Amino acid sequence: MKHREPTERHVTELQAFTLVEVLIAVMIMGMMLMSITKMLTAVRTTRDTVHNIQESMLAGPAILDQIERDLAGILVMDRPLALHLRVTNRIDLGLDADRIDFVSTSNSMDWLAEGDRFLRADYNEVGFCARPNKDEDQFLELYRREGFGVDDEPFTGGKYQFLHDRVRAFDIEVLARDGDEDEPLEEWGKNPEDEETIGLPAAVRISITIELAPRLLREQLVFLDSDKRTVTYTRTVRFPEALRGEEGTIPYLTIPASPAAPNAPVDDTLDGNQLQDRGDQLDTGDRSAPTGNPK
Image 1 (cartoon, rainbow, N blue to C red):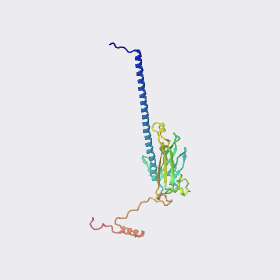
Image 2: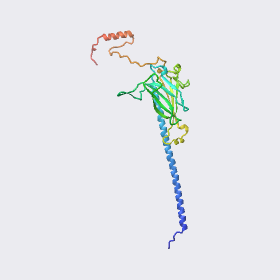
Image 3: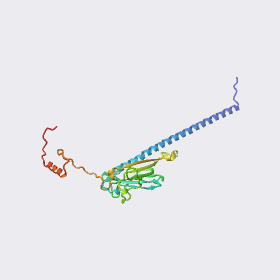
């Protein structure tokens, strides 16, 4: 039987059917690529969002930990009440940009070169303040101030150490007394003549608001609601009641007296003169070794 060649009409129909298959395949591949692209974008956005949240969760508590450590070592002994603590209420760029200054026993972070030696101060002027961000005017920059040693103006001068650059608010409230009966104060220690606002208060409440920093693309923040881009951390630092007394009543560190001799029993009923006489007798008495067999 003779094989019949396909006609021109048959060839045209076969070619048209193959083109439709190619178009369908291209359309399916395009849809798959679009799905993969969206999935990769979502994964990258989620990854960067988690990174930003973790970064802010580390930065906020770390800053508050530093402030609390410095305040825990606040120095008030042998100092006027007006120089114990100063809290300044400030507004910058429409944002809370408060400031706190004091003297702390925290070791200085900076070293002072003196010849071939490097020294650190045991007492330092410390402060925390917020300034406008030079690159992005909707943010504040947070700094830690440290003055090496202590001078007559402990609330000024020193070097500034950068802490964070995406601060939306740095707010400090002063609790003058224990309890929540009174409204918190926004300033403290500004007027030396006001005895109600000098010395140490019962506590200070410090709040810092940080906005999430985009890891790769700023546009990724669009996926977050405005209230989820910022995180606020609050810490209340209380001061010991013994350090909140009036001037002249604050306890001082003293060197304890030398312990009594091991063989000199002390009678608690004796007064000072009798104890002194007893001590003189011991000094002039027999210092020979005790008799008997040692155990």
